[in-house]
Length: 125
Image 1 (spheres, rainbow, N blue to C red):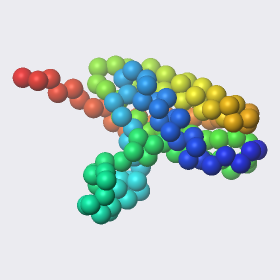
Image 2 (cartoon, rainbow, N blue to C red):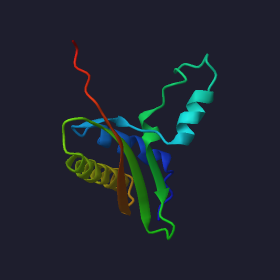
Image 3 (cartoon, helix red, strand yellow):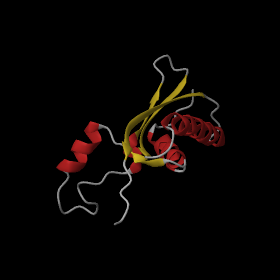
């Protein structure tokens, strides 16, 4: 297995997931949210904001057989969550495999998609 840092895959996976129609955003893990909240108020980005990559986790499989990618999605209301999750799964998997191939690494990629919530639409009155 080639030595590729997990951070190299986060942006690729986040971009692919956010391009899926019906994905409203990516939900950061609690650790990322707490880290962002604890950031000094004078930083360039507001403390309540986190990068989309915070909603993606990339790890090497314990047996070294490839990559495990976890994507935590917030979906838009009004569409079938299962269809969107399948689409995210497929697009993220394809994007990561293509990115790895461009780096000369042909490795197995397993993608898990977790729907953390469905954002309600707020129509203007």
